Length: 190
Image (tube, rainbow, N blue to C red; front, side):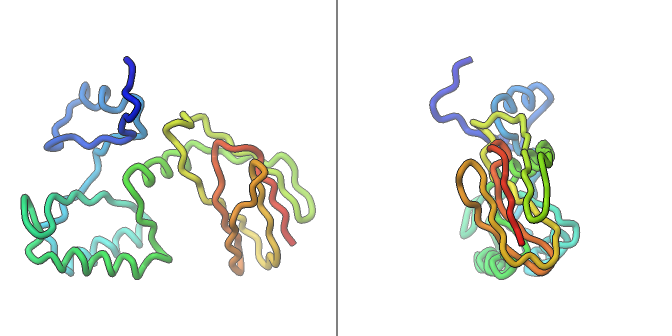
C-alpha cells in the first residue's frame, strides 16, 4: 500500500477501541500505537497528581496523559489551575524528568532496547564504540543518551559522524547524546 507523504508515526485509537486485527493494521509502518494512557481531567486533584509523579520518579517509569478538555468539554478539569499548577511542578523537576511527545518517548525506549554498543578499541584515554540499531531510520530518529561511568574526567571529547557531541561531565560519569544509527563514536578523555 502506498502511504501519503505525511503519514503519522504514532496512532491512538478513537474511543480506545481496538482488537488484535486493528492493533496489527494500525501498527504497520509506525513507531508505536498508544495502548498505555491514563485519563487526566475531571478526577484530578493536587494530591493524586503529586502521587502519580512521585511513583514515576520512584519507579523510573513513564506515563501518557489523555486530556480532552482543560477549561471545558468532555472530562475537563474541575479547576483549570490544577493542570497549570501541575505543569509548573513538572517543570520544577526538569533535572529529574524528561517530558517529550509520545513519539519521542516511545521511540527512545524502543531504540534503547534495540541498540547495542560494541567497543572496537580502547586504550588510555580513548574509546571507539560502534552503535548498532536495525530499526527503520525513517521512523526512528531519536538520539540516545550514553553514560560513561568513570570518575575524575577532566576533559572529554566525543565525535560521531564528524560532529562533536555535547557532553555533560559529572563527578563519577559523563553523559552525551548519540545517533544509534550513526557511525562509530570516538571518545577521548583525560
